[in-house]
Image 1 (tube, rainbow, N blue to C red):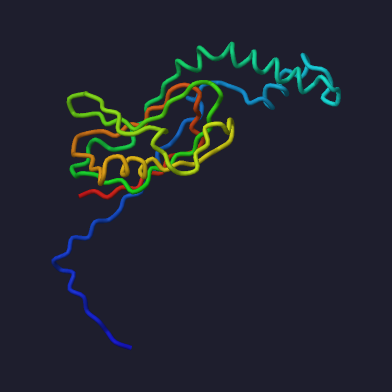
Image 2 (tube, rainbow, N blue to C red):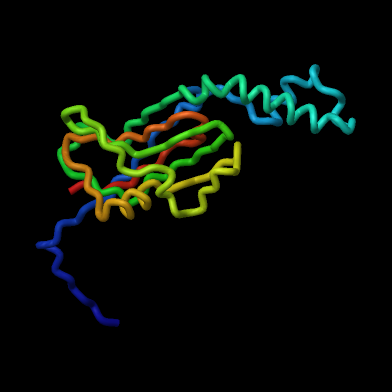
Length: 185
């Protein structure tokens, strides 16, 4: 066995910071899944063993979605992902988000808010390469926005005094806390 000494006195060690952003699911738009709607409205439906049950659930649930569509499309939620009091630049290695989509139009993006209050969209769900399926409605899916951000803007660095915001609009629900991994230099 050989002992090797490595001189790290001149090297700066940069610790990674892991933050968990609390997601308040009550801020999601109030929309029921098809099964939840069927249970809540069972008095309007024939018994589930009858042939027309499935057709009636689909028809009435479609009407429910149409009636809810305007309200859901107007929904917007901004979640601050960074602490503005930090005095160092931030490099992001992970921004893990668990979400569910609906058939109602939705958008999700990372937005840079400058110290002057200006906003710039950095990336959106369209930039996600991993296994995100927008057609899987009311199914929890996990995405990593940092991969899309760093792919779109190589080695993205959030300067001191600026904010990174997750902007959620329309028929998309955040389901769990958000994990943010960053290095501050």
